[in-house]
Image (tube, rainbow, N blue to C red):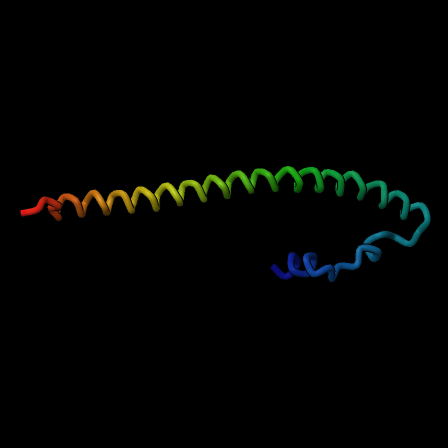
Length: 85
């Protein structure tokens, strides 16, 4: 959690990861860009999937709440008679 919080709070200095040598600087940038692009694509693909999963869970919760309420009403109808005597 410590590293995730530092990334979220932008406490990471990215420029320190790139080498100061002229040949290694371009090489490290060329190596980092495809990895970063793949990460953006994967991350942006996960967001809709997470939204679909959350909406499915929400619908299931609403269904179970409705079923529980309906089941309680049916159970009360068995024990309580609404006929006038």
